[in-house]
Length: 290
Image (cartoon, rainbow, N blue to C red):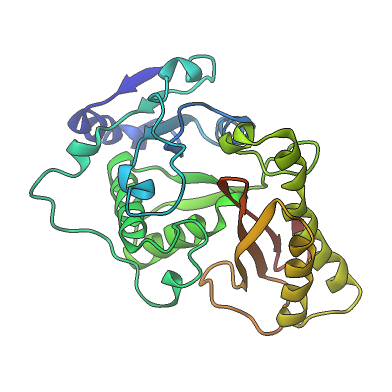
């Protein structure tokens, strides 16, 4: 595994990709450790691509002091040794100050309806802008053929797809199913911060989404009714507070009044002192990504 920290070195390396096969890219942001979801991405990238690139990057503004999101990301730096046995070709660890020098003046700003259902960014426009800008930069620097993301980060995937489309960046997205613990809780580094009681309570997030699926299969297709089902399930749990719920198009994030194949059901909630996101997708072919 080759470790690259210098921006110019990464740019020069990427210029030689074309003759060596397809390039897969997995970004890992703000994580001091790897969990099962990351490992699933690494396994998938090796199956699909000849060249594998992982980026470990800390993004301070995504969870800065202006946000009311509890900060669980500013622990120790991610250790490249965690990837030593992952059969990765290149580990890119750019410095934030090199990506954003003092004279940086061209951020990518997300406008329109995609700003509204901010499940991941805690209503922080600065964090959303930085995320979009960082991803645009990484795609231009690394030049991957395929970028791999997990379904849990559905809003991020929608934003990245919009960046790729609007800026005509030649890369495709490959979304893999959410990795879950045995109790259904979506895998996250924050899961280990919960007490046993909170951890058990958090399973209501996935359960409430599955209730949507069940009621759809029984004939309910009105988004308002399905939203009430989710809210009622979570309201019965004293350890969990629902903060945001979106029943929407997975690409545009536009809300739906009536659901159909091609609908994202996504939520954000507080469990104890921490924030969690989860979603399920009713795919256009009628199958479910759970």
